[in-house]
Length: 367
Image 1: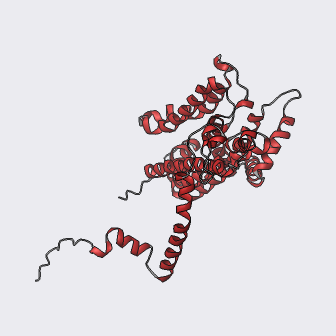
Image 2 (image 1 turned 60 degrees about the vertical axis):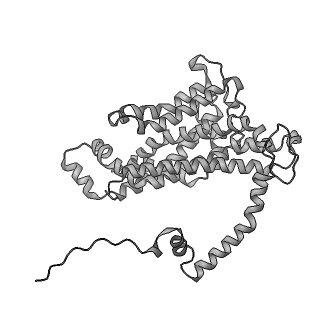
Image 3 (image 1 turned 90 degrees about the vertical axis):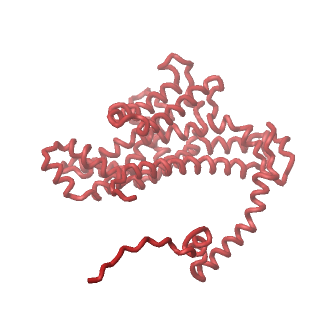
């Protein structure tokens, strides 16, 4: 009888390890890939040096006026630095900017709360803080509820307004869309019909049309003489628009859950809401997280459409700065590059947060 001795594990071949092996496997694995790699590298070599020279090396960095942009061969980042406060805060009073900064810090803390709080406090403390944030922040910026100087929404603007509107809409639309998704799956015909109409309407109508309807038609539904703030109307439109898309995301998540999960919950004697919130909802969040993130990013970027109805968020503030008589030097590339970079950084940060949440929700036990 032959006895087989276990052999020691052998290291991977040298030709399959390291940077050279990765380049060979991913960029030059065959003739078409090699040609594509060479063409792309050639394009980058022809474009990047001049772009880097214009963006950084020859750029104008210091100064406060257009006259300080003395080098015509480089970007005028003086334009961005001179308008930075307006880009970030709009026309909000300078002496009251601490309120906006407090709201931004509070948003970061609310987002970080699920990571920092103990598990037994995440639902009892973290969720109520999350839901209360939009109203507390709006009251702080307004000022009257806290006995501070009143600041009209006409002065709210800049990138902070993009962030506040997106965050407040997402926070309120999240539970509302969940209820719409449950209603669409309901066995009660009236509730199901109402939810279907709401979802299909807000998914089917362009967001620009919704903004115009919110600005012009929504006040007609309020009692005569009632003055509804334009920013409040926009917020309502964004919440309903977000809810329509998120409801379909949740519905897809519900359909992805095996029927056995529902049957197992029923066999334990759980009520409808216990089964939905404790068993089904966490699994829906897990399978729907990529689509949820995509919807969040879509809404965040759609806040730039507010310029159409005269709300001065980041993009409309940039366009206003470009038409200023003191800066008629053709600084549109610098302004739009700044807007693009700011939005990209925020969207990439949201992607990182989503990836972290997906990792925490992963129950596959894979290394």
